[in-house]
Length: 364
Ligand code: NAD
Ligand code: GLY
Image (spheres, rainbow, N blue to C red):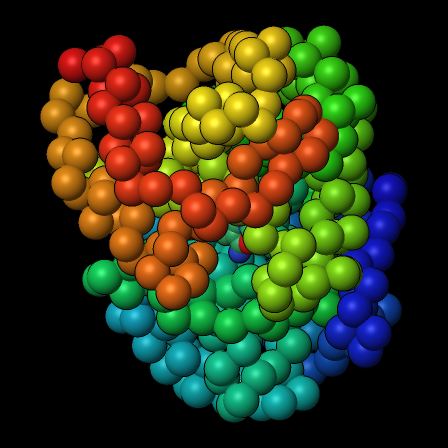
């Protein structure tokens, strides 16, 4: 098992990565101080696959447990499902000494973390991520949220888990589309922080997509290391943490323009990173050779095309609801070379419009 730590003073916690570690969940939770009752929040795809292993381990360690499953998908990251889980927690008499286990992908992790942050003004929780995207990104760093009809992740908090336990074997059942989605986040880390990691991904992409466990363990560890490093310096995104949003400005806008139904997060991020890299090149920040390498690696993962119709005005509207906007300005994270990005707030609307127009010409 590989281990690393997110250093946040009294809110520090470990990330543990290994195979077949779900069977140790009970002991792991005891070791970080959980006792009493645990509410496992999961989704209807993950529950039949992994809830039993978790329950067995937790019950062996003497925990009283209950499972709550939400329907899979982004639409469940909603106030309506939060309310249902609050009710289940109250019915179970979950108290301040109890805890929550988030077992699933980023949807479950964000929602269960939001419940943990707010139920009884906060109870402890643990992230047990089962998608590659959640293992390399959403389970680490404490961003928890639900969506609002006017925008994604609009209601939430920074609330750190007490532990992140990553079982790589859960990826065996993950649909290929979701694996690719997680790879987009992995590539993000190479571009923003580590050119050597980027080159390793470039050389070993096939191995990853074929799920060779040793290399998967390496990329999950490396991604968590980069994220932990950034979060430790800037927990609440006052500065450097914003670099983790590379590709997200346009990615979120694409998700919003397609009502969060057509793309999954990683697919939208793929286009967001592609566009941000092109924008960086147009601005003279990134050289053409590096742009080609980024585009090539992104294209080699393979992604679904754009929908038959895409409304540019809806994308612009999506950009206006971006949480990262400051004083009406759009914030873009743009690569300056592979392994380094900068935060830019002076890109004009005209340049963004032209970028999108040229991009659409390739598809429509
Ligand atoms: P997801 O949670 O919807 O999971 C994708 C699909 O895979 C779902 O259908 C799920 O049921 C299924 N699944 C999960 N694990 C499985 C397994 N082991 N085997 C088979 N099926 C499995 O999506 P996601 O991509 O994991 O997460 C996306 C969400 O994460 C978005 O809501 C996004 O906003 C959020 N996110 C949050 C952060 C953060 O820092 N908090 C960062 C990135 C993304
Ligand atoms: N996924 C971006 C962040 O955690 O800050």
